[in-house]
Length: 585
Image (cartoon, rainbow, N blue to C red):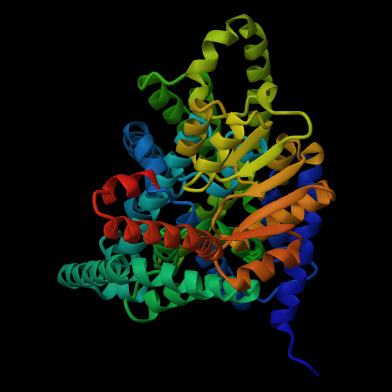
């Protein structure tokens, strides 16, 4: 007989998550709600199948690593810096207010101040996963309001990473009842805090000094090998390996190690491909993380403490939302930005669960407190999509009322970089992907020759430069089928891939071939291996920089030899001006 608790946990968790996730999707709820319900069904507090809690916790740790790695991969200092004036003070203010409200509620429930504080902090951080999916569905990620919302959550996430690092050594001062917390003196706490901060500092310095060079280098060398499997393995090895080393050697949390690994990997030009290739694995283990969280929830608390659940839910939905709305209003953001930020903050998710689990393990939070957090999180995830639906209806009505003034508002919204569909050719055009060193030379030439052209680029500055040159640009990732569809891929004559990453070009070529089998495709390559890979995925022709340079040099050899002969003849002939002869030549 086989010992199968791990297999049973994987099969049961994934299958239940799929079933309840589909039900949640049909009900127009976030799939996260379905995953949490799947965990409740698989947990020890409900009849039927009960998964192994120990294995579930270990799988959830992998989920935490990959979730934090994904947060680091999407952490853009540039995007955060562009909205820093509102998101940094705004997120700090919102976390402070929500934590204070949670502290007050905990005090009213008779908890210790340390437990109440951690409870409040858990209620202050919104789910990046929930908000990202809501913004993606509405194509708001690249708008200013989308950047503000994501930047706000990045600041919250950074604060929570700091809390995860600082909480263990401070558990004694906060009233934790674990063995270490009860026996530690104030001197022990200070030494532990200093030792922890020292190790964290060393780890961060090493990552900044060595990791930011080694990690991108490893990824680029792996990509040059041309194996997609090795590339994906390299990404996962970096995420899991750095997280494990951070914990085993530096006693740093898995969360911080994985986050920094993602940040360092973001320095690479292949970060988009790394995010794309690791996404299925990240999604799978993130689902298991939410399932394991749901397993901890005792549904009896819904009957035993309904008023406490309601108060917790109101702090999340009203407290966080009100803070976001007020901050956006103080900074004189448009009303749509105020409402989008307010609605986006009206929920909590993954970091709340991670922090609550740490609080329970340190004896800072009771099981009842965690159940309150889980119940309120479930309710907030249920109602959040409804808020976005109401926001969509209001936005549609608002746009209809202001359609007359749309001409003047287009310039104000230009930074949102939404494509002007009227400028995109309908048929027999060329789609150019990438406006970097090569694309910025190709695009204007085609434009001067009157060739119908549309550009796709994921860099805001590139899109702005292209539009200034009169080239219609769609801001987005060409790996998305919707972006290619916006470029009218089905009726295009040719596709030019001016991007330098062959591994990123491959999936784009496949999508283009599926949408338009007869389209002519030309792509860049840097090696014979990349040429072979691109032809394998369906490209018609490739341009390799070294080959073109060699061909141009060979074509120039004959004219150079003729020039040398004329100069030599001019030097022999008295009275002739070699410089004039050379200039004429």
